[in-house]
Image 1 (tube, rainbow, N blue to C red):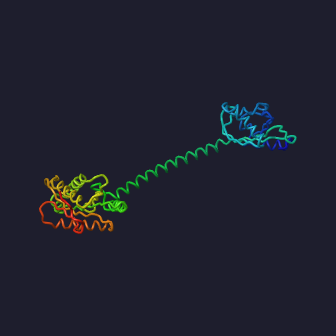
Image 2 (cartoon, helix red, strand yellow; image 1 turned 120 degrees about the vertical axis):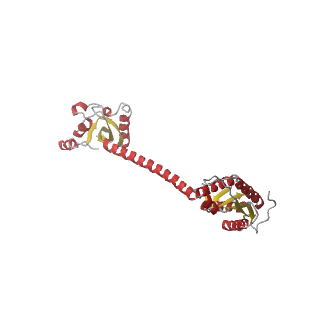
Image 3 (cartoon, rainbow, N blue to C red; image 1 turned 90 degrees about the vertical axis):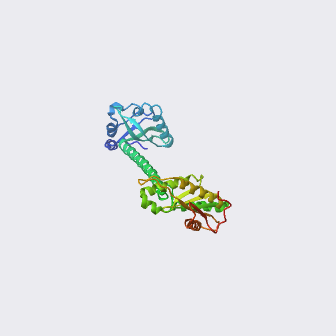
Length: 330
């Protein structure tokens, strides 16, 4: 970089008010000082010329940063850095610093030219923008988490019966389809119980719908006592329930159904019009590997119809006529 000593060049440098433009000797002492340097740093020319430019660095970096800057400028013909600088009044500002060597004879560095700009405001703006971005990302992430939880809850509600909090038809069909694929792979049996409350309309008409709801909840309680981990219970209609029993043959399913019937019959439900008991009818069907879940439910429903039309006193359990006969019914 050639030296410009004429008055016009110095006048031009002095007119630059937004940048501190000054010269350093090879050791880093200030040789010249422009108007912009005086405005930014706070020093008059006579106060700073001759002093080492490390004066502009904070105490914690003064021993290292200035020498690193000159070494980098010497080695690479250019130095560019950003960091804290110190004014005459000891206040700090964020500065963008450029230093380039000044050559006399080829290869001989006779000094350095430094240009410093106060970028505190732009840094504050960038920092504010960064914080705003982080806050926005945090809020988006938080909101995304809330929406994820909400979607899971909505999905759960879509699959759940609002009164009994067990699976509804939609949830049952989804789970049953999954189990069917799994049992198709492993060729293990499972069965369904189609459960219907007898004369439920009469219960509602006689004791009221609130009592009818309590009766439905009582049936769910009795059914849950017959379930194992993994079994599925669902309300698929007003007074219709279905149980899916994993790894269960029709004869075992019949025994479960009979215990369920006895449990429901032995329980009473309280109402404003007095206590009452109810009965249920149960249809049982064992899954066949060649059928859909809809076909399995249709067979269980057929068995349920046989149970409901049976005149035998007490709760009635019937197996699908086309299914293998149960080995016992204890």
